[in-house]
Length: 199
Image (cartoon, rainbow, N blue to C red; front, top):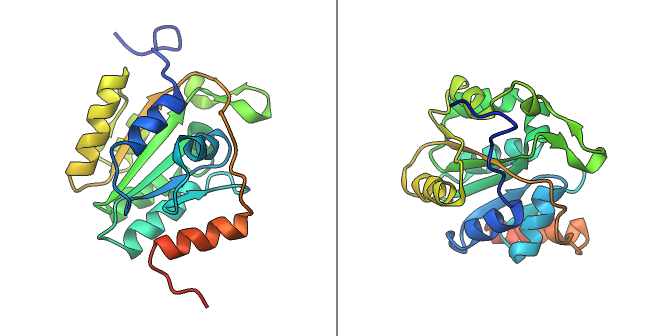
């Protein structure tokens, strides 16, 4: 049976974010996209290796890609909403072409631009981002249908060197908090966590 908006089991973004944080080590870099993706990442566990997008929609995947290429020994996870991924679809093709083995993209798909009024995105009509990612060359792309499958997909991504895309169909619950630090402070904390010397 094909997945439709009527039969998709929608999971909790906050819960899934916490599960991911429980599976990674301190050296893992996690890029949280603008809006609820970053807000829930902050609430699940603020850490120096988290970077929160606070003003640039669609830029979490490009930043994660750049970091994965610059530091190939580091595991990089991007958590981004489907609306932002749709804004910069070409980045998926670049990920497929460059194929960083240390990059995992988790797409939180609630089929709406939640923070701007809940307008339906293309994924709420016809677009399947896991299929799009595969078409862009990210062979390890899937859409888990429940929390157990999600955890299995994340563990596989952490263990199998290859770019991965995991599209999680989530509910529209608001985020439970927001990053409180000045973005400049967040930037420098993240740079230090990535081993950059600060002047």
